[in-house]
Image (cartoon, rainbow, N blue to C red; front, top):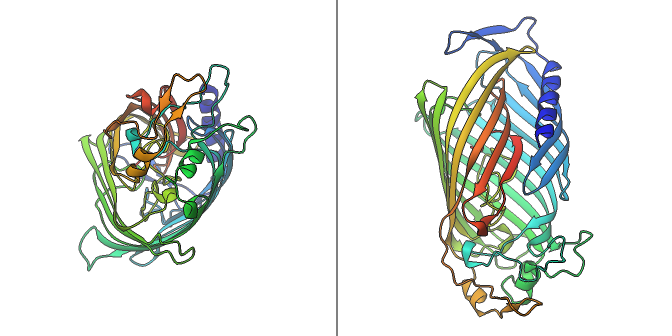
Length: 449
């Protein structure tokens, strides 16, 4: 892992050396310490190989390019717009093809966002419904097995999301939002070599009717989103003060498949950044909740976080690098859930290198989340028990436990270039072995929020 981190840093420096700027001579802006920062103008390109690691996904490789436009530099460190393209694969069998664009000033008084992505995951985690109510162990795991496919399935998804944000009748920092989302999801049992013949939880759920036949292999989901945002942050990527509050209604009429999965949900995200010592030491926290208000949601969309503007690539929760670090990905799954992330962000040092502004930071953190609306618990209770081959272990689909908060904690390292490019390394551990037994490492980009 250390070699991977050094390689990423070396490639980042090489890529920054080739970044383009329309200005003949960089401007300078006085920082809070009195030192002059290089002010970026015009176009700035950051082509880089993708070299990262996620404890749940494995080693990632590929290529990506960040494309910034800073205009005349008067808004720096804010950009006029940003685009990103990525093509990458994970050793665990996942792949990503993605384009997204963030256009806060392309249209007057209107922020536009576009995301077009295709994800494949040949080892997509599935731990059942309702958190701790679902047993976390593989009942068929035997000493001679080198790897278990019990909690995996094959998952493929195309995602298209377009969103807009406009001022709400001139009220400062208050905006109304609207958007459209389309998801095409395809699901089947795990097909990787070495897992042939293994029984999976996904197949048990199908056999017992916990997952219904008309949703078993995925489908099409169309969402119409409408919401409000209050945003008083002083920066989009590394804010040191202010609030970001987003409330979104997402209506999903079953227009294409017509299987009776019309539904309405509400998502609330509350972020707050509190400066403890200028912009060098910041207390940051995020509280989120999503609840089904009406209708029925297909099982494969239960863990989708219905936000209008993405801060991270994956929008699944809860568990993993984007929501509950240290906890197995998709461990906490239900139609309604709540979570919180608490961080102390410390910018240790700032400097200039290869004509770029750099900062190094640390962020110890604590994450918590749980299912607040259960799904299909009656079907889980009625299902037959599973007996392991040795005849000693009997495991029901319903553990008999109550759902309680899932806890994870750890610390992160951040390497920041020009305030808008953040290389992130997080180390995290679940506090309950049912959520994961090992220390997890995540190497990627951006703060979690």
